[in-house]
Length: 258
Image (cartoon, rainbow, N blue to C red; front, side, top):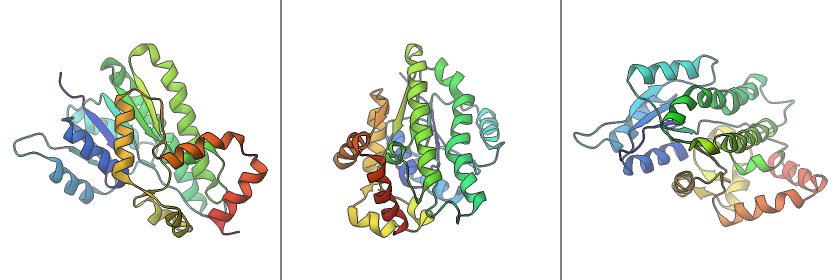
């Protein structure tokens, strides 16, 4: 049986690039989508076997309303029909909602929520036809509100909720949906976030390949939620039992410094 074609967004670095490496090693044809063409070309050269099929590269930002449609058109023009969709693209911003750039905060919603949903809706028919899979990259942030990164945390709560609901809807269609919920991970994500990176490093970050492998393994096993790392599993399991009046001031001190 041939390995199913995979579309990965946010594939220019971090978890997305490592997922591409894992899927490529397993023999899956790949389409990579992100803003940074140069980074994807370097990755594609690394992954392409001599005489074999190199990953298809589509360079575009997914925050614009018509971007998911443009990506679908580019794949169709290349006769690439995804059976596995990896919605990995996303970003966050650190600071108070009242002080952060409004356009940047709305961009988080556009990328983390609207684009993810649009791509899922666009490719779901082909995924269902192929009895394929969807991997949505959420976060441990999905399990709690996050003062200091309020919009980002809320966006990841949507990803987790949407993934779990869709997984149930598709259960009798032989389509699996997995939400990958990593904790702090050593990627370029924090270069853009800024703010409290040093504090997170003091707690320790997971490396992106470990997170990517956990996501791949969970996806292939049909698991609905994957939380990599023992500490992250413990934290998310305890979260429902911690009163919000206790938890929120702690999160504010961590992410706002006060």
